[in-house]
Picture 1 (cartoon, rainbow, N blue to C red):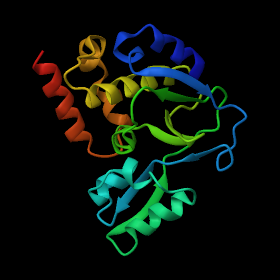
Picture 2: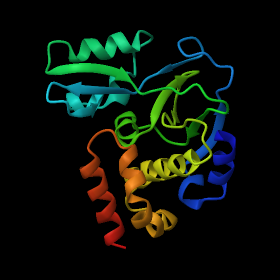
Picture 3: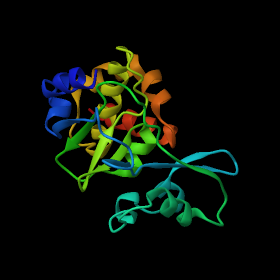
Picture 4: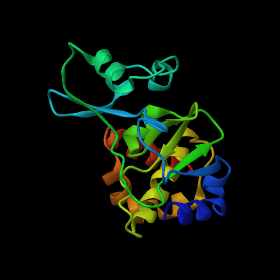
Length: 195
């Protein structure tokens, strides 16, 4: 599945200009070969946040010089604050899981909030899709989420394919988001309205 979706990304100008390649994660072991670096925070009002979103900081910068114990580090940052729980983004154990290498710095908080995960693999932050269950229909959701990530990072570079399908797939896009969904959906609407 992941390899198939990556092949489609090569043909999509809204994604291919940001995508370098995909790393086949089959056979890789979490905590040995890679670490999950994207965290969700549930506050005591049961609102969900990315770690950086909760702290008002940038997770990419927070983890820059951390060399291990990522979950403990994340928990230490929110200790004593209004937090119910801290969790890594889910990591589905499926065949053909792919980590996506992009040609720019990964925004861990944006990725987490819109429904992607981020791993640290061989010193690089790579994107993955935590909602992929191996069902062929997950390919649509995965592609949309990746397209949304790049559109929000680059609001002046309009992905016309995403714009044309945005109305049809709004529910899928929003259902993948774990935090700030209204903010991100409104931002997408603003981006597409101005075109």
